Image (cartoon, rainbow, N blue to C red; front, side, top):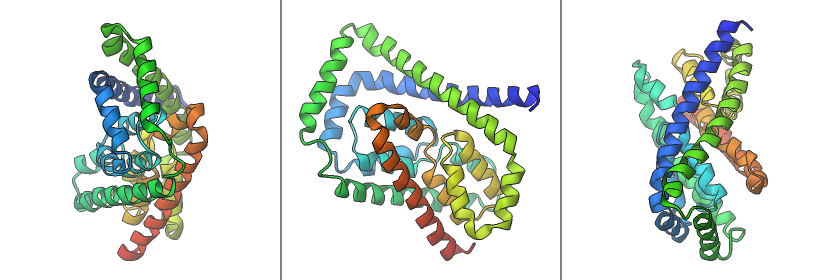
Length: 287
């Protein structure tokens, strides 16, 4: 690998991570003012959360899945809600598809709609299945979390500025390292090799696209979009890859000891969902 390629990968990783930093910091500053009320609303609406999760996940920014993972770690949202967010989010894919006008641009509408509906439906189903496994006393749990937060952040400046900044910088550092590592891997393999494999194995394209989507990096959604725009990936396979693609959200869950086991369940649900609906759409629209 040449120095120029490494520098390009580093700069791309830094750019993507900086966007996450700005997004996470701004969100947490706002959240600091409304955290108590928002948390209580989320707990009270625990089993309608997938609807709001699917809507939130539609924001075309990789920071959405990171923020959703953070809220899940804090136990503000349910398992079904985090699944809904992960299934509906698309990172930079939507931006790329919209900023590269072509005869395929109109497919953004069914793409967004299908991801929203699938995310919402699967999220509701997950919450129905895991309802008994959820916390028995969410209000008490919420009070404990809020009390702990207030205990450490009595000073307004610390609560509304310093704490969000520290939290955002921690996420930024983690995201940057992951972006660099995965960027190096993708850069070493090469996009052309991905394209050639998919073109010659179109019947397994939804599975392969889903495997690419598992890569916890914004680059995976960009790669899938590029393959689709280049005619190397069908619409059904694109949907499959973007359904399971949750950016760095899943990496955040794997990083936390409290959600490590649930992260495996979430990953399995998203992966199975992406392959199932990917093949359904391929059968309807043609491979």
